[in-house]
Image (cartoon, rainbow, N blue to C red; front, side):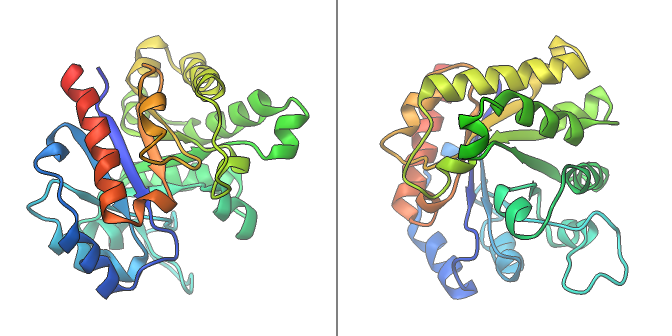
Amino acid sequence: MRKSVIAGNWKMYKTVTEALEFFSKVEFAGKTDRVETVVCAPFVALPALVQETKASGIQIGAQNMHWEEEGAYTGEISPSMLTALGVTHAIIGHSERRAYFAETDESVRLKTRSALDHQLTPIVCVGETLEEREAGRTRELVREQVVAAIRGLSSEEACRLILAYEPVWAIGTGRSATVEDATDVIRFIRKSVADQFDQQVANEVRILYGGSVKPDNIQSFLDTEEIDGALVGGASLDPSSFARLVEVAAQRGDLG
């Protein structure tokens, strides 16, 4: 059974003080042994959180990165800067980055390649807008995004990444995809990976669901074998809420 992942995306929330206060309140009681637990925090909080969580089993991720090692890229952060801090994951291609900062499938590919080269685990986001969904283009758009992200990777490299299906219309709206819809798209994503590599690689790649995931609905998503965890926004900002998400995922690990 693939190890479950609960990844929190704090977006542009929490000062360093607030971030440290979060971890003073959260209690996982060893559950991080059974769940890959990641908090993707703002850049300014990363050094403090890496130190704060060293003995906890929680891993700290970035919400973005540049693909170059260094250079004249004002305002950007390189993958080597992240690994030097002890950061282990990086969200790549989140819909907000695509919509507000002009990220493209090509920049997502470059970042995915660079993250893997620097021993970071990329959490690559794919998903369709409401307009694209209503036009019947979900599979077409998601396949394009997946294929672009994994193009040029070896089978071993593909197995190291995490994919996250985040329907854009469900992010921060309070609406979530039905379990059936999410499972159908994630099964299609796995098939798209198999088409590029083989079924063995597809079976190893972990695929998360994201989009208004909360403690009261996560169980239904984790009840299906296709979904390996969640990329969580708003519900990851509250210590008790995030701990509950990890607890539910850990129970799934116990059953495995």
